[in-house]
Image 1 (spheres, one colour):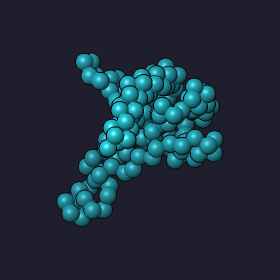
Image 2 (tube, one colour; image 1 turned 135 degrees about the vertical axis):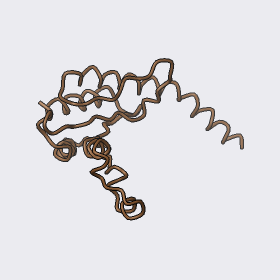
Image 3 (cartoon, helix red, strand yellow; image 1 turned 180 degrees about the vertical axis):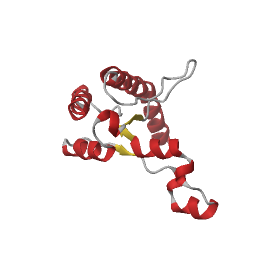
Image 4 (cartoon, helix red, strand yellow; image 1 turned 90 degrees about the vertical axis):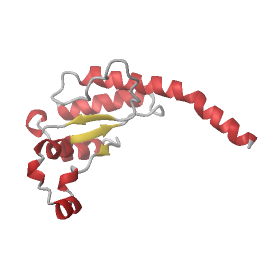
Length: 142
């Protein structure tokens, strides 16, 4: 039990430091991607404490000149892991069969589901890792 308490205390001591580092990465991404033809995460609501746990961008092929899947492939070629966001709920056969949902009745959900990508965001990233992600995204989108 004493070891468990020590472990929990050790983990909790890291929470604030990890949160601050994720926030710094988030802000770096926002600054570095501001002029790219991407849709960035919504601004953080005032008087809230955002977790900064998932940095998602939306890739509109018409604006960015590259499809989401091609972007994912290029990031993978550069050894950068990304989070793939899946189809919207109305596009899954279960919901279509069970509730009769037609994905075309939910165009915004469909569009967002097919454009969203998560970029690396972890306190385990070094400053060089973050710089590499930024440089690679800028290279692929430009």
